[in-house]
Image (cartoon, rainbow, N blue to C red):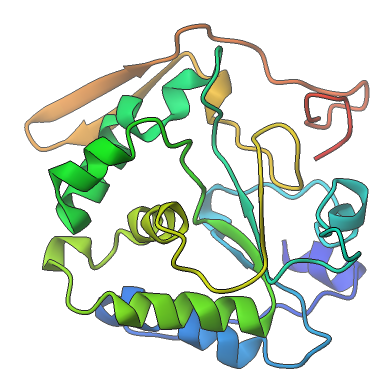
Length: 224
Protein backbone atom coordinates (compact mmCIF):
# COMPACT_ATOMS: atom_id res chain seq x y z
CA UNK A 1 0.00 0.00 0.00
CA UNK A 2 2.82 2.42 0.83
CA UNK A 3 4.43 1.82 -2.59
CA UNK A 4 1.10 2.49 -4.32
CA UNK A 5 0.70 5.74 -2.38
CA UNK A 6 4.15 6.92 -3.45
CA UNK A 7 3.47 5.95 -7.07
CA UNK A 8 0.26 8.01 -7.17
CA UNK A 9 1.45 10.99 -5.10
CA UNK A 10 -0.82 10.09 -2.20
CA UNK A 11 0.30 11.13 1.29
CA UNK A 12 -0.01 8.37 3.89
CA UNK A 13 -0.71 9.59 7.45
CA UNK A 14 -0.38 7.57 10.64
CA UNK A 15 -3.16 8.09 13.17
CA UNK A 16 -1.66 7.73 16.64
CA UNK A 17 -4.18 7.26 19.44
CA UNK A 18 -4.77 5.12 22.50
CA UNK A 19 -7.02 2.10 21.75
CA UNK A 20 -9.48 2.97 24.53
CA UNK A 21 -10.01 6.40 22.97
CA UNK A 22 -10.52 5.02 19.46
CA UNK A 23 -14.26 5.62 19.10
CA UNK A 24 -14.11 9.02 20.76
CA UNK A 25 -11.14 10.50 18.90
CA UNK A 26 -10.89 8.66 15.58
CA UNK A 27 -12.82 11.02 13.35
CA UNK A 28 -11.81 14.23 15.15
CA UNK A 29 -8.20 13.17 14.59
CA UNK A 30 -8.94 12.53 10.92
CA UNK A 31 -10.46 16.01 10.65
CA UNK A 32 -7.25 17.49 12.08
CA UNK A 33 -5.05 15.60 9.62
CA UNK A 34 -7.28 16.16 6.59
CA UNK A 35 -7.61 19.89 7.24
CA UNK A 36 -6.96 21.85 4.04
CA UNK A 37 -9.81 22.74 1.62
CA UNK A 38 -8.08 20.87 -1.20
CA UNK A 39 -7.59 17.73 0.87
CA UNK A 40 -9.65 14.64 0.07
CA UNK A 41 -8.82 11.78 2.41
CA UNK A 42 -9.43 8.05 2.75
CA UNK A 43 -9.76 6.41 6.14
CA UNK A 44 -8.91 2.79 5.40
CA UNK A 45 -8.52 -0.40 7.41
CA UNK A 46 -5.34 -1.81 5.87
CA UNK A 47 -5.75 -5.20 7.54
CA UNK A 48 -8.38 -6.45 5.10
CA UNK A 49 -8.07 -4.11 2.11
CA UNK A 50 -6.51 -4.74 -1.28
CA UNK A 51 -5.54 -1.90 -3.60
CA UNK A 52 -5.73 -2.41 -7.37
CA UNK A 53 -5.05 1.21 -8.39
CA UNK A 54 -5.17 4.79 -7.12
CA UNK A 55 -8.55 4.92 -5.29
CA UNK A 56 -8.78 8.69 -5.66
CA UNK A 57 -8.72 8.55 -9.46
CA UNK A 58 -11.62 6.09 -9.35
CA UNK A 59 -13.82 8.65 -7.58
CA UNK A 60 -14.27 10.37 -10.93
CA UNK A 61 -14.58 7.12 -12.88
CA UNK A 62 -17.07 5.39 -10.60
CA UNK A 63 -19.69 8.01 -9.78
CA UNK A 64 -18.14 9.47 -6.67
CA UNK A 65 -19.05 13.09 -7.38
CA UNK A 66 -22.28 14.84 -6.42
CA UNK A 67 -24.66 16.62 -8.76
CA UNK A 68 -22.60 19.82 -8.31
CA UNK A 69 -19.56 18.09 -9.78
CA UNK A 70 -17.70 18.09 -6.45
CA UNK A 71 -16.78 15.06 -4.34
CA UNK A 72 -19.14 14.79 -1.33
CA UNK A 73 -17.90 15.54 2.16
CA UNK A 74 -18.43 11.84 2.85
CA UNK A 75 -18.31 9.00 0.33
CA UNK A 76 -19.49 5.74 1.91
CA UNK A 77 -19.85 2.18 0.65
CA UNK A 78 -22.51 -0.43 1.32
CA UNK A 79 -21.45 -4.01 1.99
CA UNK A 80 -24.60 -5.42 0.40
CA UNK A 81 -28.02 -4.52 -0.93
CA UNK A 82 -31.51 -5.39 0.21
CA UNK A 83 -32.26 -7.61 -2.80
CA UNK A 84 -31.22 -11.12 -3.80
CA UNK A 85 -28.54 -12.48 -3.98
CA UNK A 86 -27.05 -10.06 -1.43
CA UNK A 87 -30.03 -9.78 0.90
CA UNK A 88 -27.93 -11.51 3.57
CA UNK A 89 -26.09 -8.22 3.89
CA UNK A 90 -28.88 -6.32 5.58
CA UNK A 91 -28.33 -5.72 9.28
CA UNK A 92 -31.15 -8.01 10.35
CA UNK A 93 -29.59 -11.02 8.59
CA UNK A 94 -26.05 -10.46 9.89
CA UNK A 95 -26.02 -11.64 13.47
CA UNK A 96 -22.68 -10.01 14.27
CA UNK A 97 -23.61 -6.60 12.87
CA UNK A 98 -26.99 -6.76 14.57
CA UNK A 99 -25.41 -7.61 17.92
CA UNK A 100 -23.08 -4.60 17.62
CA UNK A 101 -26.05 -2.26 17.17
CA UNK A 102 -27.89 -3.93 20.06
CA UNK A 103 -24.87 -3.43 22.33
CA UNK A 104 -24.67 0.27 21.45
CA UNK A 105 -28.27 1.35 20.95
CA UNK A 106 -30.56 -1.45 22.15
CA UNK A 107 -32.73 -4.13 20.59
CA UNK A 108 -35.50 -1.76 19.46
CA UNK A 109 -33.04 0.23 17.35
CA UNK A 110 -31.57 -2.95 15.86
CA UNK A 111 -35.09 -4.11 14.98
CA UNK A 112 -35.83 -0.77 13.30
CA UNK A 113 -32.66 -1.22 11.22
CA UNK A 114 -33.59 -4.79 10.23
CA UNK A 115 -33.67 -4.10 6.47
CA UNK A 116 -30.75 -1.64 6.50
CA UNK A 117 -27.93 -2.56 4.05
CA UNK A 118 -24.83 -2.24 6.21
CA UNK A 119 -22.23 0.42 5.41
CA UNK A 120 -18.52 -0.33 5.73
CA UNK A 121 -16.67 1.79 8.30
CA UNK A 122 -13.30 0.45 7.13
CA UNK A 123 -13.22 2.58 3.97
CA UNK A 124 -14.47 6.16 4.27
CA UNK A 125 -13.58 8.96 1.84
CA UNK A 126 -14.03 12.50 3.08
CA UNK A 127 -13.10 16.13 3.47
CA UNK A 128 -12.18 17.85 6.71
CA UNK A 129 -15.82 18.97 6.94
CA UNK A 130 -17.01 15.40 6.51
CA UNK A 131 -14.76 13.97 9.20
CA UNK A 132 -15.60 16.91 11.48
CA UNK A 133 -19.31 16.12 11.01
CA UNK A 134 -18.58 12.55 12.09
CA UNK A 135 -16.67 13.74 15.15
CA UNK A 136 -19.46 16.13 16.12
CA UNK A 137 -22.18 13.49 15.69
CA UNK A 138 -20.18 10.94 17.71
CA UNK A 139 -19.72 13.46 20.50
CA UNK A 140 -23.42 14.34 20.52
CA UNK A 141 -24.30 10.70 21.25
CA UNK A 142 -22.90 11.14 24.74
CA UNK A 143 -21.85 8.23 26.89
CA UNK A 144 -22.46 4.84 25.26
CA UNK A 145 -22.01 1.41 26.89
CA UNK A 146 -18.40 0.30 27.26
CA UNK A 147 -19.16 -2.66 24.97
CA UNK A 148 -19.58 -0.09 22.21
CA UNK A 149 -16.11 1.45 22.54
CA UNK A 150 -14.75 -0.38 19.49
CA UNK A 151 -17.99 -0.79 17.51
CA UNK A 152 -17.30 2.01 15.05
CA UNK A 153 -19.27 0.29 12.29
CA UNK A 154 -22.40 0.08 14.45
CA UNK A 155 -22.10 3.78 15.31
CA UNK A 156 -21.49 4.78 11.67
CA UNK A 157 -24.55 2.88 10.47
CA UNK A 158 -26.68 4.33 13.25
CA UNK A 159 -25.62 7.89 12.44
CA UNK A 160 -26.41 7.47 8.74
CA UNK A 161 -29.67 5.62 9.43
CA UNK A 162 -30.86 8.39 11.79
CA UNK A 163 -29.59 11.12 9.41
CA UNK A 164 -27.43 12.65 12.10
CA UNK A 165 -24.44 13.49 9.88
CA UNK A 166 -24.68 17.10 8.74
CA UNK A 167 -22.51 16.97 5.63
CA UNK A 168 -22.95 16.28 1.93
CA UNK A 169 -22.91 12.52 1.49
CA UNK A 170 -23.11 9.77 -1.10
CA UNK A 171 -23.59 6.11 -0.23
CA UNK A 172 -22.53 3.80 -3.05
CA UNK A 173 -24.11 0.34 -3.40
CA UNK A 174 -21.94 -2.76 -3.30
CA UNK A 175 -20.69 -3.55 -6.79
CA UNK A 176 -21.32 -0.05 -8.12
CA UNK A 177 -18.73 2.22 -6.53
CA UNK A 178 -15.12 2.93 -5.68
CA UNK A 179 -14.92 0.31 -2.90
CA UNK A 180 -16.02 -3.26 -3.66
CA UNK A 181 -16.79 -5.54 -0.69
CA UNK A 182 -15.68 -9.14 -1.21
CA UNK A 183 -17.80 -10.79 1.47
CA UNK A 184 -20.85 -11.61 -0.75
CA UNK A 185 -18.68 -14.04 -2.74
CA UNK A 186 -18.00 -16.41 0.16
CA UNK A 187 -18.66 -20.07 0.73
CA UNK A 188 -18.56 -20.48 4.50
CA UNK A 189 -16.83 -18.05 6.86
CA UNK A 190 -16.24 -19.03 10.46
CA UNK A 191 -16.62 -16.22 13.00
CA UNK A 192 -15.11 -17.16 16.37
CA UNK A 193 -17.33 -16.53 19.39
CA UNK A 194 -16.96 -17.39 23.04
CA UNK A 195 -17.64 -21.06 23.38
CA UNK A 196 -16.96 -21.95 19.77
CA UNK A 197 -17.27 -20.94 16.13
CA UNK A 198 -20.46 -20.05 14.34
CA UNK A 199 -20.75 -20.58 10.57
CA UNK A 200 -22.08 -17.86 8.29
CA UNK A 201 -23.46 -19.31 5.07
CA UNK A 202 -23.86 -17.50 1.77
CA UNK A 203 -27.13 -18.44 0.13
CA UNK A 204 -25.46 -18.59 -3.26
CA UNK A 205 -21.64 -18.81 -3.21
CA UNK A 206 -20.22 -17.21 -6.34
CA UNK A 207 -16.74 -16.71 -7.81
CA UNK A 208 -15.16 -13.28 -7.57
CA UNK A 209 -15.99 -11.08 -10.58
CA UNK A 210 -12.64 -10.69 -12.32
CA UNK A 211 -11.48 -8.96 -15.48
CA UNK A 212 -9.29 -10.69 -18.06
CA UNK A 213 -6.32 -9.12 -16.28
CA UNK A 214 -7.39 -10.68 -12.97
CA UNK A 215 -8.69 -7.47 -11.35
CA UNK A 216 -11.91 -7.34 -9.32
CA UNK A 217 -14.66 -5.55 -11.22
CA UNK A 218 -18.02 -4.01 -10.36
CA UNK A 219 -21.34 -5.30 -11.65
CA UNK A 220 -20.94 -3.26 -14.85
CA UNK A 221 -17.44 -4.57 -15.55
CA UNK A 222 -15.58 -1.43 -14.41
CA UNK A 223 -12.47 -2.07 -12.31
CA UNK A 224 -13.18 -1.17 -8.64
